[in-house]
Length: 325
Image (cartoon, rainbow, N blue to C red; front, top):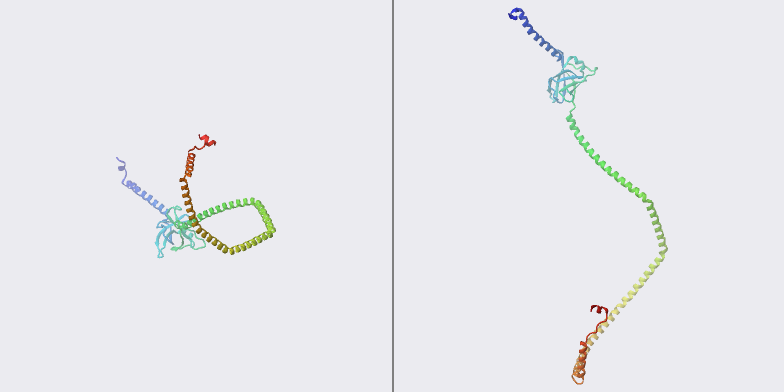
């Protein structure tokens, strides 16, 4: 027979009861443990604070004191002044830690990155504790975006300042370079200064000697200038006298020109007379050549002149003519 048929009905009911009761007991124990871990059986009270905005807070976010969770956010609502009013549920056992000078701040569960939470500072012992429904002051969190927005103009100004400093550095560098060049010029000038001073001394001595010589020769120069002026005055007087005689000379020249003109008029008839005489002489010579014995002598003279034209020209005895032959 099977084992279950050998158990009594009462024994079977006990076994089934234990199978039901044990899970229930385990479940209750788990609930108690969870309730204790979540402080479900702890007494609580409520306090409020106000922020300019919600910063991501919502019911269930942790409320911390010295890094220990002492409660959670129970409600977040907007006030008539457009602020965020946060109601916090705090374990009553930490009531004496939160006093009138305590401050609520916004923090992060993981430091800089994490879920937002409220961190409350411990109040001074001499200050009264915050009662149920009481209010504590808040402190706005550090907003990196606003800081960047505020720092950005400052960074632009710093950048411009650095650029200006760099330009000034370049100017100073150029000025220093110019100063070095000026110092080199001064050094060169200092090296040449003795020679320049010597030249100045020599020039001064030469000027002094020239001045002294000029001073000595000045009377003679003045006398020479005076004599030149006197000669110029005499020349002017002679010129004036010559200018005074000039009209008479011009009149004399005019008379001479008139005489030459009259002589020229007398010469023309004389020339005509001479021309007529020459024509008469030519006629006489021609007539004489045609009469004997004059014609015979004339023929001989013409023959002799013809032979002279036909006779060869004597050769030159110069060396250059011989070379050409």
